[in-house]
Amino acid sequence: MLRADALREIYPELERCIVVTIMGAVAAELYALGHRPNFFYMEHSMGLASSVGLGLALSLPEQQVIVLDGDGSLLMNLGTLTTLARYRPSNLLHIVFDNESLVSVGGFPTATASGSDLAAMARAAGIPLVMKAETPVQFSTAVTQALTRRVMTTLVTKVEASSPVSYRLDLDLLENRFQFKRYLDSLPHPS
Image (cartoon, rainbow, N blue to C red; front, top):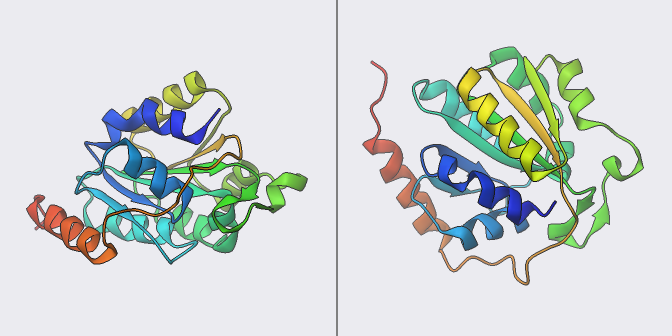
């Protein structure tokens, strides 16, 4: 399955959630589908999307937060799984696109290319619900289940190691930050 096809499948759900993406290909593919002020692209900060998503989920418990992560980024900050499991916010869905490659920085293979299992690591870390998907139908079904169940979930999705022509966004990083902040400010905040 192509990551862009997977994103297209769940795009209507993303429009209703706070979305944090990793850098590079994931950000570019989501942006190509149509930017929204509730999308925050974590450019130049590989491995930290799950940490930012956790902070947002904890501070805005009434809002659904979706993190779009990658195998390389997760492996760079593997300790995030234990932190996610410790706090386990029910409004956080952590999607990991596993293409077995650091495609955004040259296509070097990650540890998942030689057998490391991110879903097993998430389970061992104590993530309450861990799912895997390898087809568009499995992926779409898993996302729907996770959003309906409202349980901290990590969904590891195998995708092909293809990439867009360019990883550049024509959205200035500061403008993305300002739009995202204005969006967050418009949400009801817990008292």
